[in-house]
Length: 420
Ligand SMILES: *Cc1c(COP(=O)(O)O)cnc(C)c1O
Image 1 (cartoon, rainbow, N blue to C red):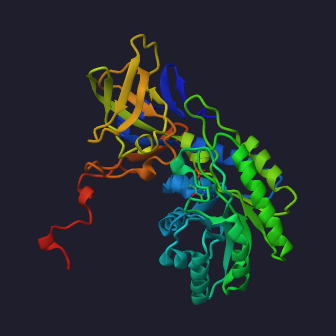
Image 2 (cartoon, rainbow, N blue to C red; image 1 turned 135 degrees about the horizontal axis):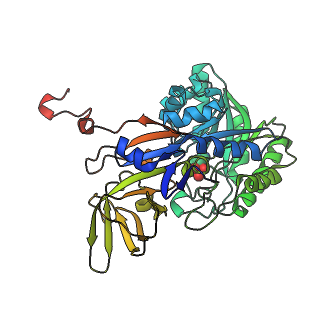
Image 3 (cartoon, rainbow, N blue to C red; image 1 turned 30 degrees about the vertical axis):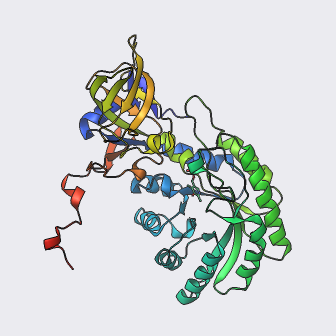
C-alpha cells in the first residue's frame, strides 16, 4: 500500500529521491511527504465507494500544510475542520468552502461567524447550547446554517483512550437518547436547516466491528428522523480508520467501505467521510540524525536531533512508529536501543528497544509521520520547528521552511518596551 518510501539498492527513498539527499539539502529534523502517496491514499477512499454518492472530507487536523491541502483539493476533496484557523488554512490552500464540514465540541463565536460567511457545507452540532448559538449567529448573519446532529453511540473505538471519542462520558457528540429532542429544537429554531446525522467514534481503529455497531445506531436514528418528516441529505460516518503499525495490519479502504455501505444501506442518503490519518499518516516520515550513542546502565541510547517537540505521539500516546535506517544492510551488531531526543523530559523518546545498529552521524527515518506529526509540534525547549518537504517523483520542494532562531521570540517584547 505504501511504495512511496522504499529501499532501492539499500538506500531508503522518498519516491525517487534518496532520503540521504533530502537530509543533505534541507537538514534535519525534516518532515518528508510523498505527493504520490497522498493522492493514492485519498483516491483509495474515493474508489472504495465508487458508484455511491460519497464526499470525502479530509480531516485537516491530521496535517494542515497548505501543500497537502492543495494536493487533496486538486482531486476534489472536501475538508473536515475543527477550528477557524483550519478554515483559514483551507481557504489559503484554495480549498472550496462549500465542501467544508465543521466538527468540534466547542465552536467559538468568531469561528462560527467565519464559517457562516463562507457558507460552508455543514456544521456538525455537538450540543444543545451550540444549536442555540448557531441559530442566533445565523440569523444575525442573514444566513441559513446547514447542520448535522453528531450523535454519540456509546461504543469503544478500540484505539488509545485519549483518541477514543464515542463513549457517553466523552465530551463529543450528543447521547442518542437526547438527540431526538435536539432534532425537534433544530426544526423550530430559525436560521437552521437540518440535513444530516453524524458520528465519529475515535481514531486509529484496527477493527471495524465497533464502527458497524455505531453506524447501525446512527442509521436507526436517521430513519427515526426521516419518519418525523425531516428531509435528510446525508449521513457522516466520521473518520478514524487506522493504519498499519507495529506488525498490525489495518482494514483496507475497501473493507471499510463494505462495513459503512452495509450499515447505511437503504437510507438513500449521501455519505460523508472524514478520514485523516489513513490518508496522511503513511504518506510522510520524519528524518532525524544520530548525534550521540550513549551506553547507559542496562540501556543503550541513540540520541537524535528530533524530539517530542517535533513528534509528540510516542510521548503522548506511547504510539509506535517504525524507525528505519536510511541505509539498509546487514547489521549484525544490531541491539536494542532507545531512540531519544534532546528535550529535557524522560518522556522524550521516539522509540524504545529498537533493533538498530547506529553510529553518530547516521540518518534515521521515523515512519508514519504524515499525520499528527508536524501539526502537534511545538517550540518546547526553544527548539525551532522542523522544515516540511514534499517529494513528487524526482523533485523535492520545501513546503514549509525551517523556523529560524529569531522566530522563537516573534511577537514577544521585554516589559519595558512592550505596548500597554
Ligand atoms: C480527528 C477527527 C477526524 C479524523 O480522524 P482520523 O483518525 O485521523 O481519521 C475525523 N472527524 C472528527 C470529528 C475528528 O475529530
